Image (cartoon, rainbow, N blue to C red; front, side, top):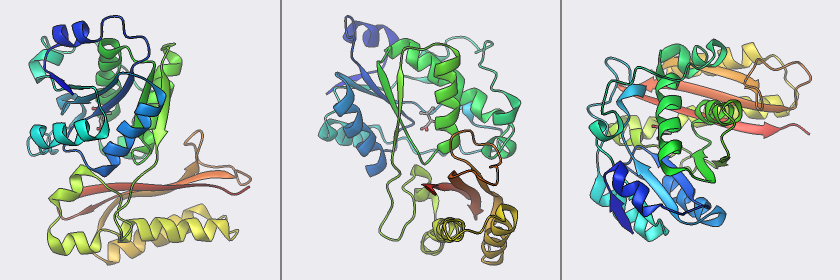
Length: 278
Ligand code: PAF
């Protein structure tokens, strides 16, 4: 596997490539990322993974500085997964000048769910993803479904800007106790780590109630929120949404997603459960 740090070298390495499969990441890779690379391998060649902690998508006081940078270990994992090219640019390489042109994400998405708690986050994500797409020019790109709202934003970005890129969603990988794999799990203390699977358990219990025919979305979400708050979490949101539009579901919606974001100490975890009632 080739490790590349500059845009010039990236363009040279990809000259003439027409079938590139791309996995954008912020590094600190885990098995979930590896599964995205494996999925990318089934859909194109060469496989390119980017490793870039994007300052534009972090708000003031968020974890940009402490986000783990583990390039050597990441490259080993990518090489073992069959990645052909790792692109690990510096901030100056991606933003040689202040990024004054950005993607404005519609308010209905930018200020909803995670966006309501992370102002500017999806604008930063959409902007860097469009830049990375322009640099790599992939035919397909793979994103994890754990970041469900992010995947939704990127699908819209690709559609609305007529990008000739297939956007694929990779399934969330979980630890044996149900905790969704995430780079941020590494922030958890041992006590928090033992408690962390409760977020998934609450979403799964809500999902089971919906599947059993309960349609009182607000009451179900409030109950999950109450359970988490009582156990010491600080809940940003628990919500039931239409899986395709992310809008509040109509009473006869059958494709639903239950999403949640909550803090354990200084760590913010997100998760979701998707299902089809048909
Ligand atoms: O999901 C992530 O790791 C990041 O948000 C992404 C898509 C790589 C953009 O920085």
